[in-house]
Image (cartoon, rainbow, N blue to C red; front, side):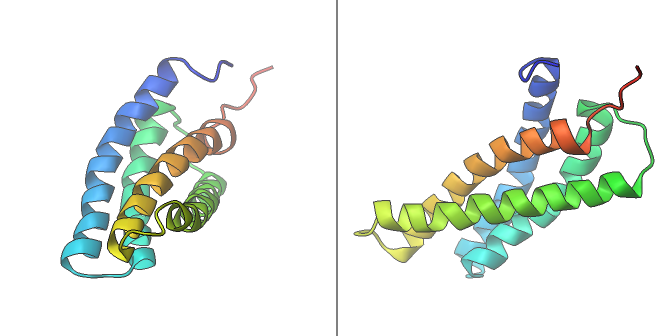
Length: 136
């Protein structure tokens, strides 16, 4: 199985949809409603993950299985990717942009976290969550 193929393109299309939905929620919560960094980013991934699960399951990976195990793997994957990506992004951006305001630092950390999350999430969904069962 190649890492980059038509499935990758489908995943990216779903990612654009998730990004539009989730990022809107995240930046609106943070910048308009003044929710904190963790509430804003978590809300993004809770809402985006629900959309992602269904679109990736049926459109990207064309998986027809009904499985509680698959849902648990998906939640674990999303959670690990979220905690790692945003946990790393915030201190790295704070260090890199130490002369900037906290608002700028945290907005940039959210963008960096998004990039890290997408890469990690693709690998996890493709090779762990929606990995096709061997028919051999």
